[in-house]
Amino acid sequence: MSKLHVTTTINGDSREFLCEPEDTLLDALRNTLGLTGAKEGCATGDCGACSVTVNGRLVCSCLMLAAEAEGQEIDTIEGMADHDKLHPLQKHFLEGAALQCGICTPGFLVAAKALLDKNPDPTETEIRYHLAGNLCRCTGYDKIIRAVQNAAAEMRGA
Image (cartoon, rainbow, N blue to C red):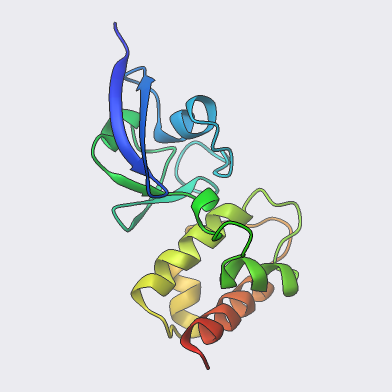
């Protein structure tokens, strides 16, 4: 079977790539486009390490076919910082030691940004609910929740 040609927008840039019909978006991001921030933790959509947004909607890129990216707007962890300036979420994850091994961190950051884009002042319960699809085996979750709360406050100017 021949490869499929996909034209999409990733982190604001128009991108084209070829993929096999069975390739996942995660495969295309990592292996074809060199965007290795999203990680494969489980390949079943249970851990959130591969989280990206597609048209503003949080998705596990291991569950989406690469061909489905045709015409979509995709945002990954690589597009979060503004060149050398970290996004407030990234800054507060670092300052609050909300990461250790780093496997889950990109997924948590993308998921947290998706939440704050929709709700700039979430409660702790809302943050925990929204991040429930992301698993961490190293840090526990309290530092992650605090980092999201601190970033939200900074972004609101509080």
